[in-house]
Image (cartoon, rainbow, N blue to C red; front, side, top):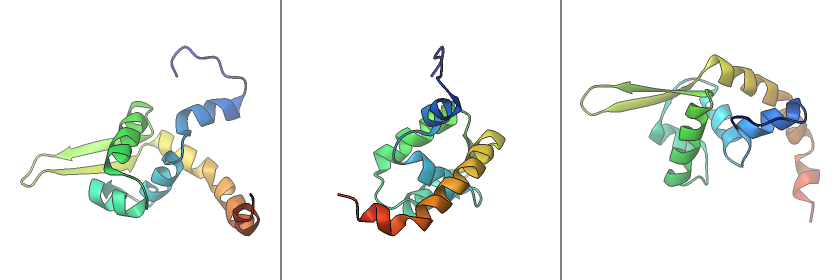
Amino acid sequence: MANRTYVCGLDAAIAVMGGKWKGLILFSIGEGPLRFGELRRAVPGISERMLILQLREMEASGLVHREVYHQVPPKVEYSLTEFGHSLNAALGPLGEWGEEHMERIQALP
């Protein structure tokens, strides 16, 4: 994403949150911090490898904060940053649109 020129705001937003899983991860963490296992259960169908990859990308983009608690057993929690919360809020209307048109979308060939 560095040194890229974007055509419009939507182009920039999709560059940050593009892909199948990031929106679902954002939505899941939006309620509050989650541990890795909780997050994996909250996003059905995602593999452990893909979740790790997506969380790393989201952390690098500044959407997600990873908090490591040095205890036994080790504990790691993921939460949204202010930047992540702002993107999650922007995705709200898109999610509402999807809910409203879900039957039609599911019927598409």
